[in-house]
Length: 137
Ligand SMILES: [Fe+2]
Ligand SMILES: [Fe+2]
Image 1 (cartoon, helix red, strand yellow):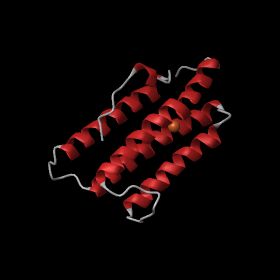
Image 2 (cartoon, rainbow, N blue to C red):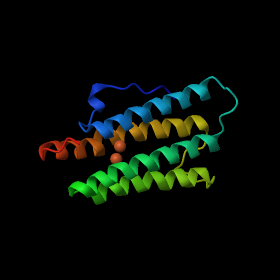
Image 3 (tube, helix red, strand yellow):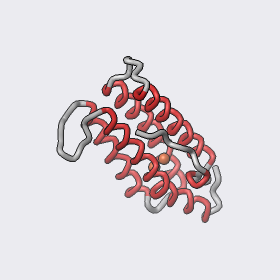
Image 4 (tube, protein in one colour):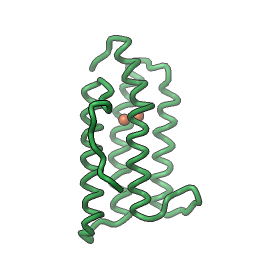
């Protein structure tokens, strides 16, 4: 899995959310580097447990934000979050499925792609709505 590069087009325009996204990208890159360098301490279980904890914290933050401001697409957005959490839980408990990646590299690629796609699509829509409604914090 290639490292993720933070790019200005990833800003959704809400400082708290952008800050967490940057931290997630950075933490994800640390993880990929440790896998690539084969430091020997990273296991697939550690990787998934880490991503699950980080995702849960970030999703709760975004969902509280949506609920606080009455975001009309909150339900669909939360469903995307729940999908990833369900996938992480499945991966973590080693429930194999044809649709799920299995190697550490595949898991990293899946998680990296999910993160960037979710920011650019779902989170960006939230940012645009907040901006259109004059909400910045
Ligand atoms: Fe997000
Ligand atoms: Fe989100």
